[in-house]
Amino acid sequence: MMNPTDNVQRILQDAVSEFSRTTGFPLAFGGLEAAGSATITALAGHRSMSLHGLRVEADRGLGGKALAEGRPRLTGDYRKSALITHHYDAEISAEGIVALFAVPVLVDGRVRAVLYGGTRGASPGSSFAPAAAEICSSLAREIRVEDEVVRRVAQRQLEAPRLSGAMIESLREGHAELRRIAADVQDESIRARLTALEQKLTQLGAPPSPSKLEVHLTPREIDVLAHAALGATNVEIGRSLGLTESTVKSYLKTAMSKFDASTRHSAVAAARQAGLIR
Image (cartoon, rainbow, N blue to C red):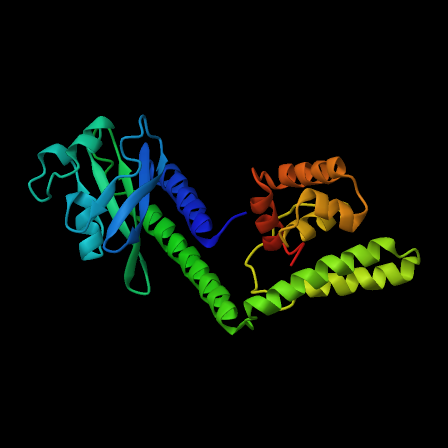
């Protein structure tokens, strides 16, 4: 499963890789802005992890100036530059960087990320500037799209109906009982109608989710998790479903493995998130 933050990080990594490829900088890295600083989380062409996780504050170092001023900055010799602070010399030196270029990514006038290109030798000249500008513009557009996705999901969650705790518990009990009844019905058409009703019940009052887990459980695995969600023990689940305790344990174990869950509680939570149970 990928949430919006994960998606923006993927987009950033793609932009950094493309930045290195199209500008000719042998080293490229970048970070997203948050609370006035940018944390480096994407790299390409690096020899070490010295830059990964580096938090660049506004006005500190070359990237900090780009972040604060909202415009590109370039130095042909980072170590000797008198125009920047040298808070990050250790991390820069660990990569052997000589020339460094930092460019902010602006979305609606606000810096949302900083991309860097570095060389371990002479300055790259100026032919890289158009390619760098295009990469930053493309990244800005993708960040804007992700912002809109996050905004719409948040709005839908605010507008979603909220049920009381007692009503949710009653729905869970009804869901588990409905699955038990459907399993005992021999008529296939009636069973199909009960199953459709049960699926509607799982979604009643549930907030919309931006993504679904692609996990497929058998009907019996869902039955067992639905009863486990009510806090029933293995013996109680077996009694309700007409199964032995060992069979219940087997279904639970299989369902947990499908969700990569270490406990029944995390498996129940994952099944709810996937919309399989209430």
